[in-house]
Length: 215
Image (tube, rainbow, N blue to C red):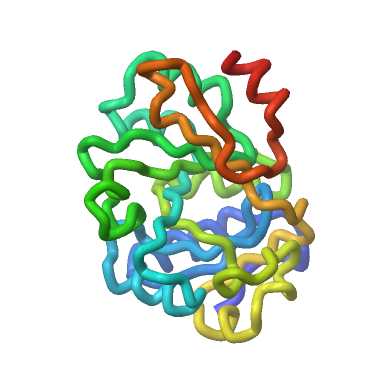
């Protein structure tokens, strides 16, 4: 099933189609603020397995959980302390994936099977670009990974998503051409204790910009 409006802004109908897809355990291709992503219900083991198979991603590798409102993250991860919450409010929404401590092992299917990995969670809240603004009404998180074969180039346009992936998903949303650079991955797991952070993967938000926010 395809949705979208010929590269125009996503509509509420598009977002409803995405929500219904997630609710019934499907897998979708959707646009974010960086690149096209694959998404599914983070609590559905069959859906997560199917997403990984479509992507050719090793099961041991974690994925991010994407929310479309910062308050949803803070509600979903009540263990976060004041320092971490302050960092999230300063950095998000934006083109970053934040690695956070996950002592309660929430969203375990996104965190990987390793016990140590389960104590870390990757969180995304994308920037509300005008053409993607309707995603704010989705009202639920999704497990997210880039819509490419594992190790392949990220998709800037829907046409860049491999044909086999587009054919294998239940819903595709076309958000037009995206920036094309995957999110900065920022490790904040020790931030509450020591104030230290590190960039794990370079991306749209650089060292200097993060230093201005976090010191």
